[in-house]
Amino acid sequence: MFSPVIRAYRIRKRHLAALAVLAVLALFFSRLLQERAGRQAVAALAPALAGRVIVVDPGHGGYDPGVVGKSGALEKDIALSVGRRLAANLGQAGAMVLMTREADTDLSDPGTVGLTAKKREDLSRRVALANDNKADLYLSIHVNSFTSPRRRGAQTFVQPGSAESKKAARFIQEELARVLEGTGRRINEVDFYVTRNATMPAVIVEIGFITNEEEEKLLQDPAYQSKAAWAVFAGTVKYFAGKESSPQPPPPFSGKTFAP
Image 1: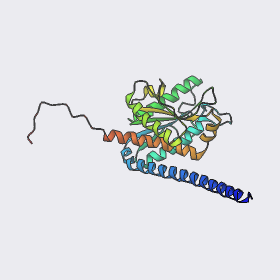
Image 2: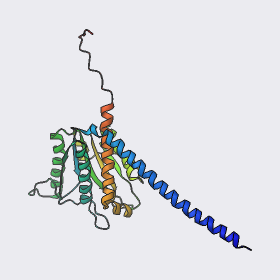
Image 3: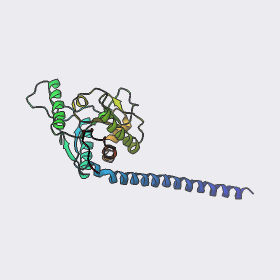
């Protein structure tokens, strides 16, 4: 007597399972289409990078590993991997890219004695590379850390009071939040040597917390590194595209008049 009811219940259960699968697939393809549309939009704006001189600075290197994760992951390796990917994206868009390092090295002299002296020399030469070449933007790639393992998310840092650096960081931070997801962090204004001494807009990008177990794994994933590099690239493109579209102030009045 009760078998028809049981069969109906089983049919409904199968239907619900099928609907759940369809919902997951719909969400997946929706995100895929959104990502594709986002990349196409960035590609359309990419000509704004043509001729721009951009310094990509993978943090640490050589004697200086940066922060170290529980699994033994090194900040210097992650920063270099993301920096290379970022440089490739920028170069393909027509920018002139200068990397402060392209291998596991630092910029201090081998004969310099003392870690403090080596670090000062290393940092000063990174900034000098940008200043001497009159770079349009300085992008320093790092990995974050904190005493609490719950902290996570990518974040940008700029020199206090630098409006143009903050403008660039805003575009990059928005793309980090959109592409990497899971980060609600905001731009932070902190006095660092690099941002203080660079004569052009400078942004330090901390692409995640190596002290967070989940993010430490992600930071070592080549696919995730590519996403992080793309996010910084997309933000950079939108920053320069915004500069090009901004109205230029009229020249000062010279006192002369011209015939129509």
